[in-house]
Image (cartoon, rainbow, N blue to C red; front, top):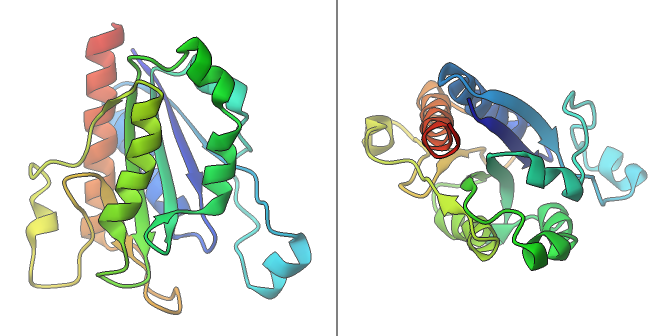
Length: 199
């Protein structure tokens, strides 16, 4: 079966929660899954003062190890409608992988969170997907087979381009059952796709 990396950056823990749900879905499809995060670039004293969640269990990823996976699912909170600087800095170091075509044909996906319903979820997903496509990856989003994203009965995340959640302006709102179901569904679909391509 395929080997999947869930690669994330999470300031306050929302994306960490979504990453673990993505991993659950990928494991349900029989994949071997690692959950790793990119390095924090904010000085520790500033991160502590900003109440960043610094006690995350996931190990720190290295750029070199990306080539070891059949699928890479990337998640980060939005920064003004695009990926966080921490994730961008990580990918900025991956020129060698691009130059050698090390990720060509591998499966990719994206997930994110925003403070509000209209806080740039889709543009953030596209900012991640753009990077993955430059590496030659095949993108799997979150199709409407996850019908929860169509709900108008409550605030829900999700888009055809990837799983999402709405954190609220103060970060107090956690991913909902529907958001986590979407994350698991996307993880499962990506793993199934990778299983078919790399069986």
